[in-house]
Image (spheres, rainbow, N blue to C red):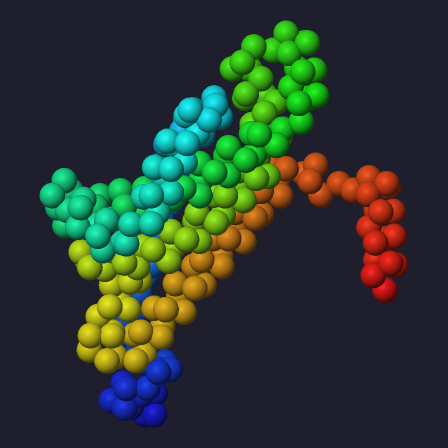
Length: 238
C-alpha cells in the first residue's frame, strides 16, 4: 500500500514508479545508448582524417583545431536551432549536433596520440621499408591507441550528458523523461532518469576502459627500472 501511495505523495524514491514505468524507462535508455553510440562512432570516423590533416603542419592544424574548438563553444540550443532547417525534428538533428561537439575532443586526442609516437620507432619502421600508409596503420596508430581511446572515453561520457538536451525535439533518451518530470514536478521520474543517465555514463566509461586495457596490454607492463623508480619516489614522499 505504501509503495503505491508514493505516487500519490509524489516521493523522490518510489518503487511503484519503477514497476509501472519499466518499459518506458527501458525504451528511453535504449534510445539514449543508440544516439550516444552512433554520435561517437561518426565523430571518430570524421575526426581521424581531420587529425591526420592537422598534423601536416601549422597551416592545417590552426584551422582544424580552431574550427572544432569553435563548434564546441556553441551553446547546444543554438546548435540545434542552426541545424533545424536541415534535419527537422529528427534524431539526425541531435546526432549531428553531438558529432560536431565530439570533434574537438577526438581530433585533439588522436593528434596528441600520433605526435607522441617515438621518432626512433618511426625511423626504425622506415628503415625496414614501411611506406606512409603501412607506417600509420602498423606502427603509429597502435602506439597512439592509449591516448586515442582515452579521448573516446571522454567524448562518450560527454555525449551521454549532452544527449539529454535532445529532449527539446523529443529525441533525448532519458532526457525526455527528465524534461517531462521537471515540467510536471514528477519527482520519482526526474530522480530515476537522472540516476540512470549517470549510471549509463559510468558503465560506458568502464566498458571502454576495459577495451582500452585489452587493446593496449603493454601499458600494464612495468619494467624493473620503472618499478624501482616508483618505489624510490614513494620512499622519498614518505
